[in-house]
Image (cartoon, rainbow, N blue to C red; front, side):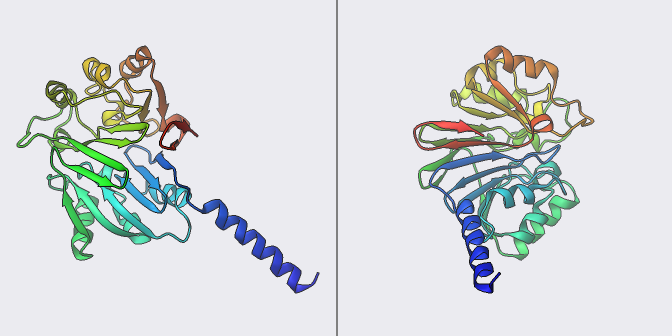
Length: 280
């Protein structure tokens, strides 16, 4: 075979590969499978937002590589709901592969060696920091995030957990034409009741189930308010906490919500076009 034919074939394969990686104009929401932790990627064209990184060596970089073009090494925004290792433990891996434009943080102090190192990297690399506060609206084109929580000076511990960081985790409502998702991080029932009292909860298409399906979260009143079409549980296989709790799964089932578990079904992707959405 002549060399020009080989070169032509290689060029066609390369072109095909690039076209399959080329971003479209739809919104993509991916809940990555990172084991016992949270990591959610939002992609709109060449713009990406990562909410949490999951634990160290959880595999978030593989998720990013799968859903971002191979030539794109810029991660525009990284949001950390609260600074614990199951939500920011793999920051080092992300920072070593991608240039991070800005980080959105809660006002909590880091907990754990990996998280402390993440904060040191943010500072040493002069990454722009935004401390999110209640009633803030983070807007990126036609995509927005309303910060619903925490309240100022919230100090109530989450039942069953000795850390106050969970009680002050960011709760954000993502809005896009024809599609919405609520990110609840690791809040517990007391924080859910506070949100109910404020009247800020609305039905959503997708709910990131709080605290990996802990029995101390997803109260009946809260679930009735948000009534998700899809309840996504980001959780590790055979984890030592017993997540997700059977009663929580039954609760969403009674509501008629489709339940997606990353420990059993892996990652899930929602694709919205501004009028409707689909799951793949």
